[in-house]
Structures are given as structure tokens and as C-alpha cells.
Image (cartoon, rainbow, N blue to C red; front, top):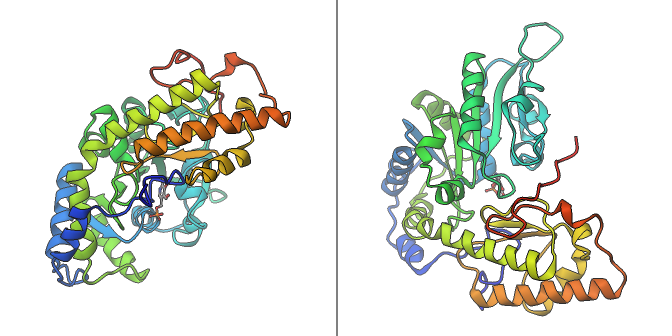
Length: 373
Ligand SMILES: Cc1ncc(COP(=O)(O)O)c(C=O)c1O
């Protein structure tokens, strides 16, 4: 097994393919701060076209692209942002919204336990002017979130409401590639409802480094300014843009097949071993519900390690370089972890009826337990 073929920690653990390495060797070496790097310009143009936006800007990371994207939507504080309570931009970006955007965040909770609805968002929006409050100026969504796809109809409802109320919309589309590959809904269709969208190149798409922010030209001009200020203006960045271009050609078309492997594995775990999950398996993640499965996750990590696999926590992440052999070994590890957990007296909490929907599985009609507020 190669280094990445047994990596279940994150979909960021891919290694550049041969074609990507070739592209790096042949990459253009212009100065991208001066907007003179051909491969960067052509990648930005390509993503502009794919997303239907007038501007696109390369960033070194999804965090920077999210944070600068958010900041570029906002003017004169005080203001507030509504974001999903589980959102990366809110929870996992080192308080960037407070520091770079000086924003207070009102987290919103998905009442269906899966994705935010307009009603969930409205509960957290401050839509009146009063000197005691910080009016909502931005809604941040994430698609996919924990591997769950946000329905286009709901995005549309939220966007119509936001527009009517002078609220801008940002999408953390780190894995919008996955959503689009799975649903067949184009990036353009998704992106039309957002002012800014951050798309990661180095998650499931498999490029070594980078993210791209898309928006209208004026917003991208602002973003370029802030990117420079934050130290994100890069020079011969064609070395990163060239393999990202290859990743779109080479890896994106394989994403749906990767999702199928994940769903089949989830089905095996659920039907053969009675594993339970924290959410539906729709794209490239499985979140094992340890307590309800009666599995000690530390034991699962140990069993995976014994077989040369890297598993950390209850989140199993998948990407195109995971090998069929690693999937078989993971099944073995899951079985062994279950048996060892039973031996030490770990019992599954709750009943079968609380099982979680896995697309295509026998228990597909089961309801996912809602997130607690
Ligand atoms: C949903 C989401 N958004 C943004 C990011 C940030 O990306 P990066 O690690 O490139 O900063 C991540 C990283 O895992 C993520 O999962």
C-alpha cells in the first residue's frame, strides 16, 4: 500500500499523481502578485467559468480563502454573521471571523439535524436597526458539511430571503466538488446563490495545495487587497495552479465512484456489523456513532493501526487514492473492534429504530437524530 492509500484521517492526505508532478515540472513561473503567471491565470479563469462568476482568486488554503471571502463581503462594523453551528469557518478557523472581520457570529442549528433551513437561519438573524445590536450582514453556508449535501431548493430559499433583506451570502465550498459530482448539479447552479464561494483544491480533488475564491470583480479586487495584506500574495504560484488544473481533469470525474465505495462500505458496516452512524453517508465521510454502535473508537483506531491503516477519531474520510485492499482491511478492523469492545463489556446505547439513513441501505428510511442546541 502507498502512503495515501491507507489514509482515512482526512481527504487532504492524497499525494500528487504522476500527471500532477509532470504539470509542476512544466508549470509557468510568472509572478502572480503581478497577475503575470499563466497557469494561475488559466486556473482562475477556468474556475470562473465553471462557477459562473466574473472573478476568481487563488489562495494558499481554504481557511484564508474563507476568511478573506467573508471579510470582502463586509464593510463598516458592527455587524453579525449567521453560520451553521458546525461550520468550519466558525469553529475551526482560529476565531478568524472575530479577528479579521470583527464580526459577532450567531450560530444557527439545523432543526432537521442535517442542514440549515431558512427557518433555522431566520431565528438567528438580526434584521432591525438599533444601536444595541449588530445587524446581520452575512449568512455563511457550507456544502458539503460533514459529507452531507445541502439541497439546492433550500439554498435558493435562503438566498432569496437574504437578497430581500440586504444580507450577503458566503459559501464554504471546500467540498462543493463532491456535492456537484454526487448530485449532477453544476458548480454554476450552486454558486449563483452566493456572493462569494471558496472552493478547495486540496481536499477530495487531490491537488497538493490551494483554494480558489470566486465572486464578482469588485469583491475579488477587495479580496486581492486583503490577501496581500494578510501575506497571501504569492509569486511563482503556477507550481501549485498547474497540478490543480490536472486535478480537475483527472480526479473530479472519479469522485462519484469514490462516494459509491464509501456507501457500500457503510452498508456493510451497518448491515453486517450493526454499526450506527452520526449522519447519513452521502459523499466521502462516515461518522461512526461509537456509543450507539457499541464500539470503543480507541479500539477501532488500534485495530486499524495493526493493519497499517491510519484512522483517528470516529470520522472516516475517503478520497480517490484509498485502495480496495485498504477498504477490506478497514472492514476487518471494524469487525475486530466490535468484537473486542463487546469482550470488555461495551454495549450499544439506544435502540435499532434510531438508526441512521444510509443511501441505498435497508434501513434507509431511518431518521438521523437531530443535533442538540
Ligand atoms: C469545510 C472546510 N472548510 C475549510 C477548510 C480549511 O481548509 P485549509 O485546511 O486548506 O485551510 C477545511 C479544512 O479541512 C474544511 O474541512
